Amino acid sequence: MPEGETLAGRGRQAGTTRCGPLPFSLKYDFIDAGPIRPFLALGVGGARLDQDPGWRPSGSISAGFDLYLSRDVFATLELKQRAFTHDTGHSLEISSVHQTGVFAGVGFYL
Image (tube, rainbow, N blue to C red; front, side, top):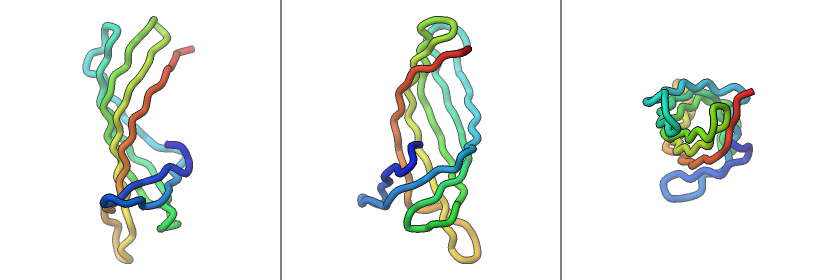
């Protein structure tokens, strides 16, 4: 996620976020052959919201597909939902602030 991404919470702008440098994701391809490969991904990482300056755990779920144009070149389209946590003083709870994003791109293997 780009640094300074604007978030919305309960129908209003909630601020900006910065994600940690090393998110961890697992991606599952439903079809591993052919040019169109749908996938599902789960991720965990850290984020810092501007209204809460400390780093907090975050999680995401993504669905999309890769379109292989050749053996080593593909286009991708992904829908991602990210959830954040907040500190209640004695524990971490899931925040009402969330983010939905649509990503498109091109990738290649070396």
